[in-house]
Image 1: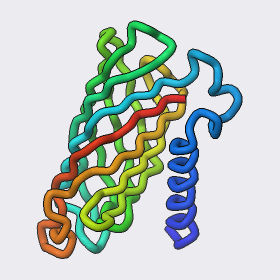
Image 2: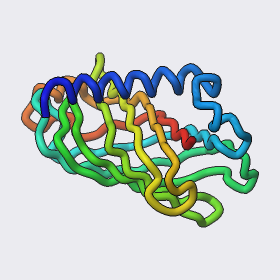
Image 3: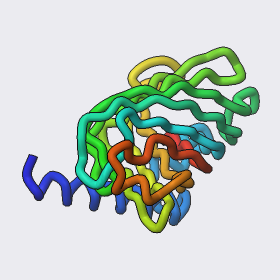
Length: 176
């Protein structure tokens, strides 16, 4: 893909992050109905094999997440997830498809496919933003954004042969 695609992806991620940080006022009017937004906070642990390096390379992604949630549905309180995927990833660029399978405390499930993603290593922190769509289960066809700031156990590993193999830290899950 050309540089325009990479810049478009980065700018799209930045715009989505700005909208999420600005809060509900920045979301489309349709998202203001009481049952439209599900907002979750929690932690994710993501492994990359091989690890993220200075040059993007094909990697497999695996991990897990745990979230506490607020929604119009009072029964929906938390979710746990399994994360899988692959694509071209590095410490400064990401072009991967990631799937998150969420099991809610109600027993319902949601499968999210993230096709727009950005993972940046900045001063030892992984700044992550992925945007996707619910492909099946609860909330089917809705948009999902998941920004987070994950601690890299050893950020100097970007320059090593093994690379950064593990990131972990707080994450959010917003379903609109």
